[in-house]
Length: 131
Length: 142
Ligand SMILES: Nc1ncnc2c1ncn2[C@@H]1O[C@H](COP(=O)(O)OP(=O)(O)OP(=O)(O)O)[C@@H](O)[C@H]1O
Ligand SMILES: [Mg+2]
Image (cartoon, rainbow over all chains, first blue to last red):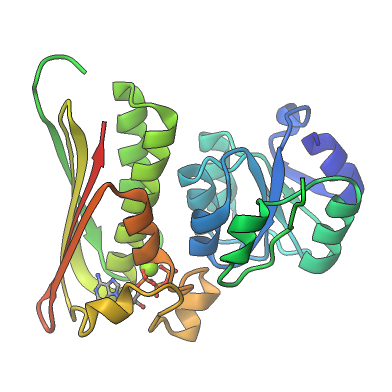
């Protein structure tokens, strides 16, 4: 699924990476605790989070996360956007809640981590996949 | 990597310095990428470094993260001055955390950091003295 499709489905504002919206994400991961992301997210995944501080972008960088969607209408400060620019990580923001945003992307065909990893889930919302 | 030389770089990490938290790990990632370490290995080292760095920021007064790269392995050596960990076996369990509400609001406190480090390392050693500090020795083979 391309970032532009995600922008459309979640009615997102693009905070960084306008020129990268044709890039694809291969899976989705929703979490507010960054160590959950580091434990379960695969490279190339889309991170949906309510966390808007600079650590969300640091985590994305460290874990090779493709792009971040901030949920619930929260937007990060300028420093966070600047870091994302420097690291080449697209940032989108939606007014939808975590549940609604994950649900819409799942319904549109985006899938999450595989079942075996999901079974070890220690917290955080995750999109499950059977394929 | 050329020859048998060992690359070493140290990063100072300050407790409660949230503005700079994660910088050392980002630098570690850049360095390993530049040296030509395979992306999957870079990612494992970066995750381990970041979890270790965040623990120093969240739970210790100050610490040092040292990156060593030899032809055989990446070593992350992290030591801090702080309260230490009273029960390491407990701290190593997935989901165990003493993080405050404030820390959770910053996105930490899942109790997954130390288990994540162990999972990404080929060798992992942790030692801690209560009232003095904690030392991690993380090795990832090349
Ligand atoms: N360097 C340290 N100094 C003192 N205590 C530590 C240190 N590192 C970890 N701890 C203790 O061990 C616990 C578990 O650490 P761990 O990194 O696994 O989880 P966490 O930091 O609580 O949450 P997460 O890493 O998922 O954000 C911490 O809550 C803390 O009590
Ligand atoms: Mg931790």
